[in-house]
Image (cartoon, rainbow, N blue to C red; front, side, top):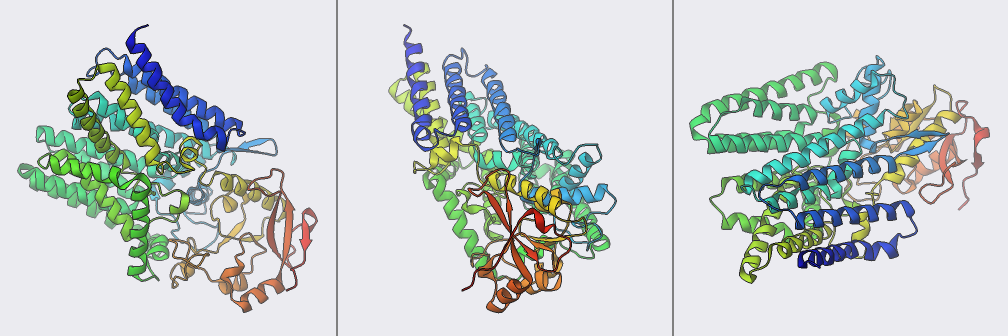
Length: 593
């Protein structure tokens, strides 16, 4: 047998064993997930085999197309796995924050305006204007509420695939056509669960990542040919409309172009400043006219009412956990490589954007979902493809140096490269801890069960209440959207009064961005919802607890599907409410202490 075939089969078998060893003991009984593990392992096997036998690694890019096809299949499986069947109908849903934007989009199309509650106060509880408008576009079509999230998820998949293609173009440019670097970068991006989860669950990170990568590609083209590109700032301006904090990336890229391209300094300065000021002024005027405010409500919720030192300290803590989770060595390697190639403007351009976003994440205190596994949060994941390009460049440089020293045959070098990539992917997802392969090979499980549960709960709420009922929620996305009930946001994202209060710590008593402001006397005592879906007794004072238990009773509702290891929902109904059908659940008395 040919020595190349023996080496390829041996190395590919090692890769499959690396993937299968822990999953067989941790979730072998979960048949769908095990099938996915086998699919992913087989995919890596095919990639390893084809890569090992490419006739000319500098010219043959068919391997990239194979990766894109495999990733598309993964995305479709993810979307299917995150859906749920209720009453014989398959429902698709997004991450809860994305469903908040969907509610604004639906109300806009239905003629109520960009508001969370039809007829309610005008509060800018979203931070993604253009993405919300795009969601509204799909609400113009006769698509049922069960299927309306699907076009958004497919859009996310489209942008994620586009991001892989742009990653390939940038990696090819930075490495001057080295296929090892290109394949490595694309595979690292494709396998990173944080990028996949946020993009496929409806968050704007997919389109923001596309805007960042497209902008970087155009900057590199400008550097190569010393060109002026007015469309660059138009693209970044669109990013500002998608999410205002793209301003950090915008300013970073603009300063880089102004400093590096000295011959075109005046043009770049004029275009960058004009488009930036025009969009910021337009957004400010829109907010003043429509919402009677300068900043979004989410700004007051997350950035006010808490000492800066507390917020930044938390940001540093979660940034370190992110770095430690992937391994400080992997994080530092691209910077070491950059110092070795100190005169390479392209490498330092990519590094600077990664640093900018990391510093911004620290400044705002990180994200609210850091406990999911210390992967890149929503701020950092949009620049992770740039980091992976640099990391692939480092891995390839080390491998080539070692291969040349050992006079390694080409097939063995390629197979060793695949092994190094596999180990890097595993390490990026938390090192070799007990749950790392679970995190890597499972479909991202961060909040999928909760999202399914919220859809079923919303449909049940719609069934047991009259259309004029009011519900108080902590999950402000799916429950209000699918129940179509007037909602009270206990955590203030869609309530201007709560957003401007002093932070009290999260519901667990710790600082938690966007989840550390609440006022039970106002939300429940004054607004008097018929149903309270999220009651946190530890967050109440003794008097508030006493008052709540006098006016509300425990209402237990049987689930059709046992999600979250529970066969029923526990919600709280107002004692005198006539808007609740009490016959569709079980009333339980408060336990006596």
